Image (tube, chains in turn yellow, red):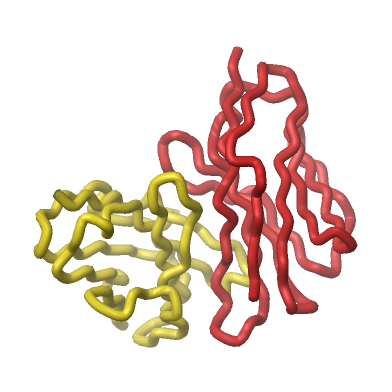
Length: 115
Length: 116
């Protein structure tokens, strides 16, 4: 039973390029969360999605960031026109029920470096 | 607003010492959940425990134990007879039925270093 799969594990982009991070939740999980971890910081909630729906995007920056979780395929976190401040580890987590009632399973993270 | 505070940024101990990691939380919810996660140097996040606000019974799992005290809004984590493999960043987290959603709110983490 594969866990939460994130790819790429490491991504290097130049300023102004686009970054796409993918997350395949655990089998049977329809709740997906994205978190960002800056160096020396804890994890900050970004967005919560269920299949085809954004439930809570209160943690997403207003510009350049978007997320989707289509009916088929992985969840995608997209960062347009990346800047150096976007360098961070991005974690995806999934659960079979909302996070407050079930265990969140985390992926190994995607580490974005912006040059 | 919900908030989790882990006042200890870094702790260093020698193997076999006991160590307690503090976690204090703030919430207006009457129903909420508390979590601890471990992040070893490899970077993944490992779930350790989830407790709901109605269950104040302390829990022990091997060398790990958790002390939940609603009166002081604390959910402390103790490792008994620490080992080098316990070296990691430990995160306390909170979730509740707040208006925007049901995401976990994390503290900034405590880095535990256990030396031999």
